[in-house]
Image (cartoon, rainbow, N blue to C red):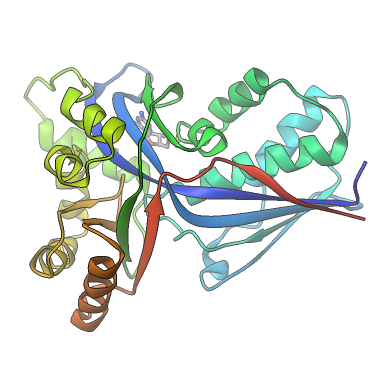
Length: 303
Ligand code: C5P
């Protein structure tokens, strides 16, 4: 057994987020096409007297360090299944925007789960790891598997999708975050009195991923939560407009926002778009990243 384990976990963008009506349990059925992108958190676990979390990185002060953090809940869940205590120090080196619609919290849950499994030598089968992830949150299973996948149900039932080639993105982070439940509530409010169509994955979008065609992907990008996110965070419309004018293939809100995602032709276009976004003052930071990216991966074991 090692004295420490570090796992690297990617962020995600939803290239299609088709949202159905609210279900009796409050969740929404989705056709959710996840694409992992190369912005990463690193989660390191080390034996400790008690369960504790620390976090470093520019947004570290916004990360909860108590048991509401999905990383703590992942450790507690795995420990309970194995009849042991979750006596571990979890350190999160955070690079994924916090409360940004890029599944940063989910990434930390999946990362801590994989790291604790390796640290404790519990050798949990992959299917059981996925089931624990699904209990932690709708986006957590995807953080574990990465690549590209269609999520159905509330997003937790994954079918891996083939992707050929790379896509280059710019992600603009906003000042402040958006609460995912609040965005879904706003979605319900905007649809009040109308029948919400069944969520269905777009065949054109799946084809674009399969053949690695950025222009075709751009034409098929769709986020049903975007009107709700912009309604709650109106300045996102300005960020989207600036990116669009700077010469992107397509622009959309990432998941429940408020991070905005800009698909570009290539890396030099991405650098130009990132500079234009920063210079406009309509975002806090602009990051270039490519996709797809690998899911949660052990990158170091120590001691
Ligand atoms: O599953 P997760 O904990 O990430 O979900 C956070 C919140 O987002 C839920 O409590 C719910 O309000 C909303 N949600 C939803 N439908 C989904 C996924 C999330 O309504 N498919």
